[in-house]
Image 1 (cartoon, rainbow, N blue to C red):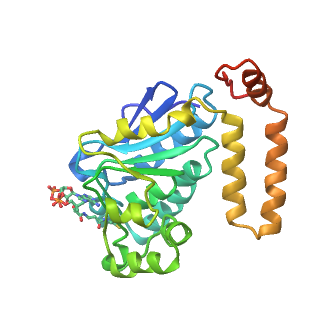
Image 2 (tube, rainbow, N blue to C red; image 1 turned 135 degrees about the horizontal axis):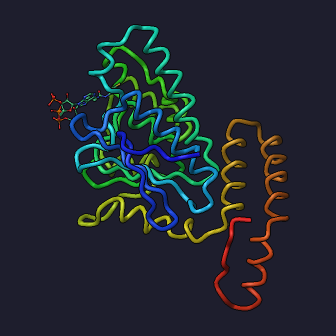
Image 3 (cartoon, rainbow, N blue to C red; image 1 turned 30 degrees about the vertical axis):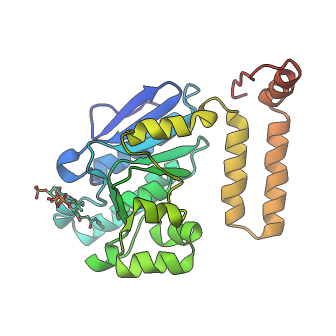
Length: 264
Ligand code: COA
């Protein structure tokens, strides 16, 4: 499957990281229909690309990661067309959400509405110091429609999610860090993409089969009761046990050298 080219999503290989840059600076990288589709296309292509160990999402410029739905495009859409876009979020953001490779959002600027929901599809989030993060939908008389009402409470807890969604409250990077909504704030002077790439170095040289199995066990377990989750973990463990990388890890340990994982 091919990566999108020449559209609003810039696709770049940085070593074994695939960097996807939302590139619509004139609209604060707002999510047009084409951009949503290209995100899904890139996620599907990355899933089967052996040269990619992780996906990094970021935005062009230093103002916005993504200002959410393209409100100018939306003015021209019928209600049925909006329903279709909301469904598209499910399938296309869903491809990132279910990615077997770790997804990291490098928040270079504001992440609002669908922009934050996109970041919630990621497994890890790194923010630049000055960012603002929020779900302002109810102030626009709608609700988050790309998973925000479901994902945010799972990450920050019910009360904080309700505070953000009902008040339309925007968090600073430091507040987001304190709430566990971002994993890390980039130090001043370090571009957030560089900081994120350095942060995920252990993933980039790590064991892909184990990472995919761990993600699957965690994500599926969050939707299940504990007993089912424990069973899911055993099934996932079985997959890593028969991987070549697992044998390589033991060999490397015995030979006192770093392991060289092949993702098999
Ligand atoms: N969709 C389409 N265009 C958008 C946009 C969006 N979500 N957000 C910003 N833009 C456009 C603005 O209309 C403006 O274009 P113009 O110069 O043609 O008028 C341009 O991007 C710059 O925006 P501006 O508001 O002047 O920049 P700012 O730095 O003062 O503020 C934001 C930036 C992101 C804080 C502000 O634009 C904003 O709050 N946007 C709406 C975000 C939102 O509510 N998203 C949730 C949708 S559900």
